[in-house]
Length: 316
Image (cartoon, rainbow, N blue to C red; front, side, top):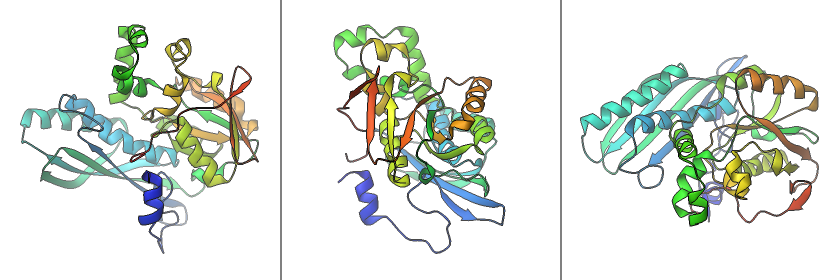
């Protein structure tokens, strides 16, 4: 039983008042005729998401940023957050750097930290985030339409390469430059969800999801929710040249923790989306098309291929 089977069987609670509950990047609660409140929550655990040696500043940043990504993918503006943290030891130097990181992320995205909880135990960080979403431009996983173009907002794979570089074969390890290592580390610890870009394009977008489980896994969430299929041209997926040169496409596509946005939109918006990506200095691209058939076809240089990996799942 993987993460999603677990949720479906045991945690798929029903709600009387929420417009949207379990099954998307955030729950939606009606505020008035024009707005919804979007609420989401993520947890980072020691030994899985970070280690004893992880830089506490960047851990603070990432803890909030992964939640920001959920609100961004719904077309929302993040507003408030609650922090719950368990600490093994009361290391004031570590705590000072951690809070400096979380405050820096909060400042960038104009978020107020308004409360939370502290406990003693194995280091674990949970953040609940709330934001506002216009009822006119709510983005969900279930809005993809056949013939929609599929877009990703920026390059993928850096975080996956950082997390997996020690398990690569020696020949691949040697080919990773120090510059690329540094970029991967930065992307892994300091993700920056494209809030301003999504705010500029949300009226054009039919469906969206944040890339936390990897492009392959998160694409499936959109397709399943929308009851559609897709054709993906792997060569169009934006990624560092190292992945192409070492035939490591699947690492970039399946590794996860990119915290960019995968979205679909009508072809009539193609040029506008492309121009807005440039405006916001994003290396995003159109990578495929939504189809009526409930299946995914992957092609590389025009030839159909099958992937050996899936997206990331807890308990998978």
